[in-house]
Length: 190
Image (cartoon, rainbow, N blue to C red; front, side, top):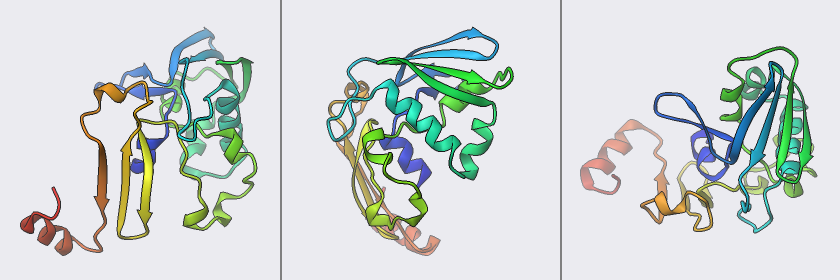
């Protein structure tokens, strides 16, 4: 699920093939000092429901994860003391100590739409059908049949859309390796 999420949620930074941080949803990432990092978002980004992506969404996202018990994100967020919105498209990250790998953190945290997630106190209580799949990423979540199928389609409004050479992707889920092997032999999947 995390690999799929990375397709329909943007992150501030993306890692290059050489594992170098490259601004993604961020237009810039600027260290102010050893424990302060300013980030400016790209202009014109929107969530899949048409709402704009703002610094308020980014600040909310990091606060939301810091105040939740997500084991995966815990190690990434350990160096973060606080995040504050400093403008409509700018945020400041205040670290509790210098952290060279903090830009890696910016590549791991999916930006949530505050207008949807601020009312969800415990996502663990949601059924799969209740989980909001609204991101801002290069693909839009289209359909999910638990244990069987998932599809995403290209987000034509994404800043990276011109570089995506497919209209969408369908993931067929198999219960075992034998099913995958048979589907590949018969040409049902690529």
